[in-house]
Image (tube, rainbow, N blue to C red; front, side, top):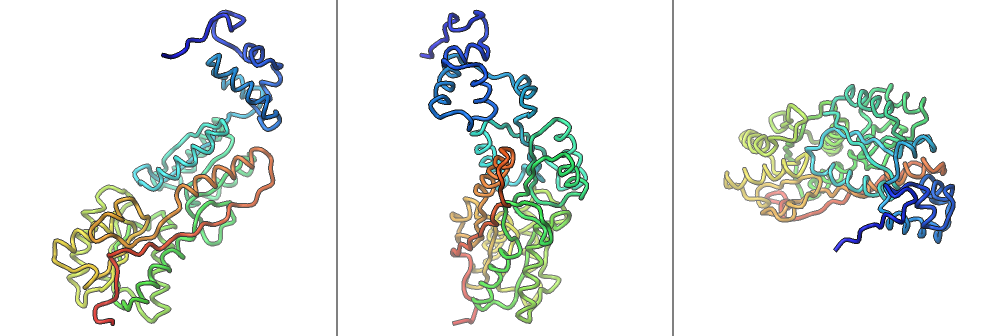
Length: 355
């Protein structure tokens, strides 16, 4: 059974108001306002009493009135390239959860990997009075960042940024992640490589990953043969497995075939694994295949997938905490860049003929 709030608890006999909360909590209305607008200025004992009164009265603060008093909207904007990518969901959930614990709501918008659309969305959020903004990646016009600085709106970039960028970022080094997997395959004796990747168009994170493969191979006197490189022609996350399977067929048909294929994400890698099985190619005996992201199915594919684990939730939490600190007026450095983890499983092994 759900307890019903007695009408006698309110002074008006209708919906409870802030004054009712103050009366039930045994504090002043100013204290309730202080609790709502800056809870750290209220003692824990008083916070507990106000929270109990709010629960008892089932009171929902009037956001518009609160904003007029505090000159804040208690909302944070988040602009992501797409909601089709399963890894972005985890980051957003952690981001929203941390902000929600501080009484902040999150508005999410998708740029569809279009920098100008991202700028338009950011302007709209600023116009609606968001207190801060999180941007997945920093591939946006300089005018967007100029706007945020001019309006003194705290912002943070997540997932990754350009090497020459000075934006605060909760992310990781995308180039380093692919340097790690490429070097490991070189250590296993592989000298012929193939690559199946998503599009690099308007995505400097993917471009950095692909660039790291080229650079690491070049350092070892090697290079990708053009027929062994397959890139999607768009940024959609739809159709990745069919693309990977078709690309795998084409790559393996150009002799001498690679002994290792590096994929841009786990979905592409799973598509490659499926086609290898269909073609009767032994993985990892004849061919090694690697992915990126470490989505749940990676550990359960057959063979299980070697991949790079990305700290999605940690990025969301770090980004949220950075904005919380900025909004509270605390001095804070840019979040530390996070490490990625190479997870070696059954889909990679020594190159054929290597003892």
